[in-house]
Length: 104
Image (cartoon, rainbow, N blue to C red; front, side, top):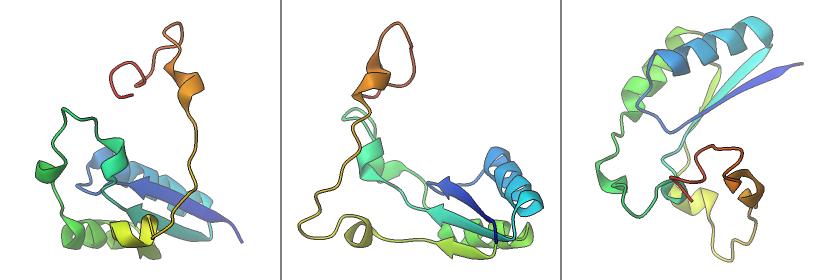
């Protein structure tokens, strides 16, 4: 069994849909996540105004054959005593620009 995973923060657009379609074509099971992750917002970005359109997102994902939508809240993703982190600091190299310089 192959599983295609499409991670999103919701407010889906055509790019997300194309990823779900590609996952459907290449996989036996398609899982998408919808999680607005506060850790992905820099101090100057407004987490509070990020669109949250879960019902519409689920409809869109279902319409292109997504089997499962995982839509956890922050307590599920970051439970009490949470201690697992991924260190992506090597991607902050100015010689290899990515989001690191604008979104540390």
